[in-house]
Length: 301
Image (cartoon, rainbow, N blue to C red; front, side, top):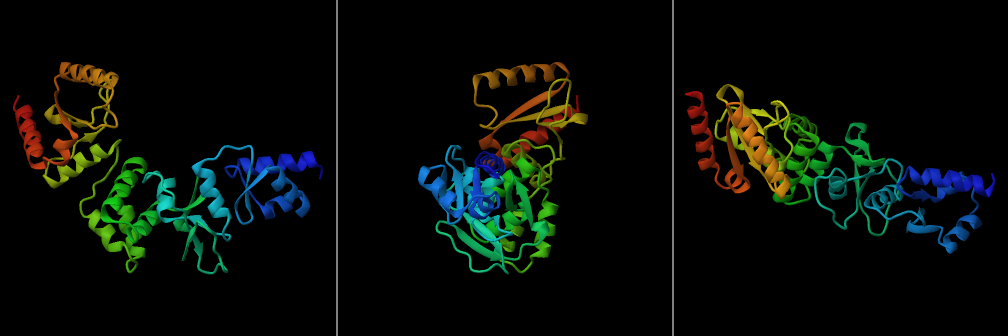
């Protein structure tokens, strides 16, 4: 193999691994030990972990850091716990690296990586962005055993909003791991969980939970009326509720669009009730009473 050919093969391999390659992969591509060492000295390869390198010209990313951690450990290793939650976009970035390896793996240890030995059935592992990672339910159950209740609640909420994770999926996951740490904390969260179908933000999910808790009939979520998608619609009552959370309603342009939306819906004979975060989260009884009153009033027209 020529130097140009092996360089192309290595670059192609690294492009599918977020800029990472292993020593074994380099040897398989045809590089000798001396050639690898020469590239290390020249800065063409940058050591990340023992036996794992980054191509020097590629940009550093979180994905490269995660991929390197997985490649540094045994076959079958996957990102897990807090790191897996970050890859699934459930929690904000942190400095920790967590990797799960099969119980049958030999001696594995790498500086800067917390290694978890565990059973890893195929159903509990996935690939996301090309990186091996614990499945979404498994990630949440692992988190439940290692983080506080508030952090777990945030992660579960994001899983419902971003990935439309249904509570029944978590119930089934718990049934398979009923005696494992963390299942009690997860069960506690599921007590108030609702079907997240259609929700686009944590605030919308909170409002659906409010409806369930306060015995308000479940509305249609983000259904279409002409060019508009009201957050919540009780069609037979001609009532719309819009939830103004910070994620979607901060800018002047968005507020102006909300005004146009309200005007268009009102012109079609609908009553529009707007609720803010503190009303949904901290004033649930008062807010529920407003919604119920509006349902009764709109129905009597």
